[in-house]
Length: 92
Image 1 (cartoon, rainbow, N blue to C red):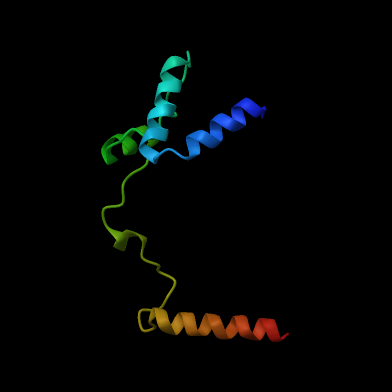
Image 2: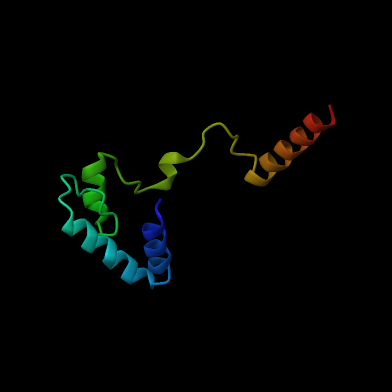
């Protein structure tokens, strides 16, 4: 990076974040960029993001519930067992 760019960058870093974003938007608008999809500061709704990415929004965490732990064991029991196994591995 040349000295002029470094000086400009250092000056921009002192600006409040909203002014930094405004400057980036001005620069992008003044450049003839073909793909402006990188305008990440624009607010997107969850529905738009879901549609754009083709991913479904999790509406029920029970859907992701682990089925490999017995219901009689608590998460604390599993974590205790895991810590004990880890300690044994370190000792060997």
